[in-house]
Amino acid sequence: MGDPNESSSKPNSNGKILYTRRDSNMDDVFAPNPPSKPSDWRRTSADFRRALAVRGDSVESERFLTRTLSTDSNDGREKWTRKFDFLLATIGFAVDLGNVWRFPYICYKNGGGAFLIPYLSMVVLGGIPLFYLELSLGQYHRSGCISIWRRICPIMKGVGYAICLMALYVSSYYNTVIAWAVFYLYSSFTSELPWSSCGNEWNDNATCVDQIRAAELNQTWSNTSQSPSEQFFERHVLESYKSEGLHDLGPPKWEIVVCLLIVYVMIYFSLWKGVKSSGKVVWFTATFPYVVLLILLVRGVTLPGAEKGIEFYLKPNWEELLRTSVWLEAATQVFFSLGPGFGTLLALASYNDFHNNCYRDALITSAINCFTSFLAGFVVFSVLGYMAHLLHKEDISEVTTGGVGLLFVVYSQALTTFDGSVFFSIMFYLMIITLGLDSTFGGLEAIVTGVADEFPKSVGKHRELFVLGLLCVSFLLSLSTTTYGGIYMVTLMETYAAGTAIMTVVLLEAIAVSWYYGIDRVSHDIRSMIRSSPGIYWTVCWKYVSPIFLMFMIVMSFVSTPDLSHGSYDFPDWTKGVGWTITMSSLSLVPAYAIYRTVTMRRKRSFRKAARADRPSHADEFM
Image 1: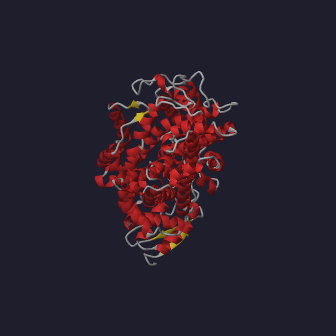
Image 2: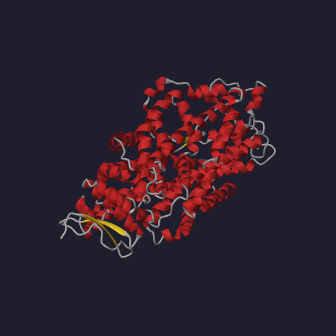
Image 3: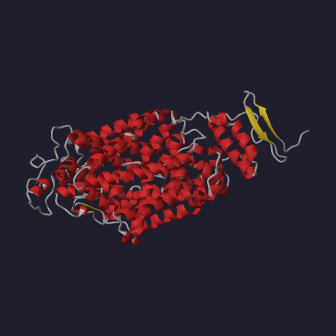
């Protein structure tokens, strides 16, 4: 008889080679016959690689990896047609409307060029490490945001369900913003942009003032005066003057409902076939915004007064760095721009080839995202400087505003003064639509992949029907944001639907992965994919820095929750209760599932089993 500890390889009944290792106290790690399902092969081989690594059998692990590569690569899971499809989809998700309106505004508001110090610090210490971690987890385990917890920490599977609910909440208002852009696009197909002058049927001629023309004539206007672009948005697109607040939303506005329906139709035909369909769509939606940004940049920097706007954008105010809120703004911008925790990175990476270089992808995507934010600042503030020049203003703050008003009011007004204003308006709002669509594709794909992987027979085999049902639910939830008071719902949901909740979810994910699943396992998983282990910088960030980064953001979000307002409307105190109810409705799924699993597992086995990751019983003996 041979050595009981010897390693051997042998063909199975189908001619495939199985690598087995015998131990004096155990049977073959793999049975002679292969598992019945391809997914079992992948999960089993992944856990056995870890088992060998823990025992120090790195050479054997590499041999095993090579022998099982054909099995791992053909587990029946859909894959990206081209590597570039994945990169474009990831870039499209990370680069969204916030890069165009939020980053330039908060950069200017929080110290100008000095803001880049806290921003880049948060990118390096929190943003990129979490981004890289999620890409590697999704690619290695090839699972969505729900089923992946079976292999990491099963008792935390409620995190996956919470992510899905938050993504549904976000889609209910984010798609309405895209619908507004669709309305603007449709309205742009005229000989003269309809928000360029007063005198239209929606204008209140008592308060509507063409401020640009008034400035040319050295006329003044009162604080109650509104520009034609502001009244077009408030009185024609939203008709918010017909609502008294959240308690009086009114009926849905049919024009916005039609635009919203168009958005959902585009989303459906981009998602229904999985990465095969979305991988084709992103070639346009992810690249077109950069074409438009470059066109607008060239046009913007050649306008009179552009240098004043760029100076306001970049001029450093070092004293601002002493304010804690500036660092919180930087952390929030980085977090919501790169998008860890939304389940999208897990979903997109799960369709990669096993040996795809996710480390390189994380660096490339993060760098492009930061560059886009910085570039958008030049595009926006060159035009704001031009507007200040036209209105004879020295302070840029007098011509700018935060939120979506920067896109739909201020920039719209500037477009009316361009030569070829109709062309630039069409291009601008096409860019806004494509930026929004890319991000909403990613958010909804996180739900679809997560649920389909968790319920492969009932949902995975009927993806088209599930996507249709999901979008119908999201559309119905969105109807409240199409009402006369819809802007108030958008403001409320934007603040509470995914702010504190998503940061808490990512904190739980970081702790579970780094401390329960283990940094050593994560490092080995990455090494098995890209042949290189993450360095000490990454492991320290994952285990210590990123959790601290997230805890800081969560605490500050509780301490500095702002009183909400829109225009002259101040949200009543009871809306805070509604907002925190929305937040807790998703977070409550985490302890709810933990209790459910603990109770059910106690009935079957023991409490310890409830907190153990799924792995083959023989591989457990290695651990």
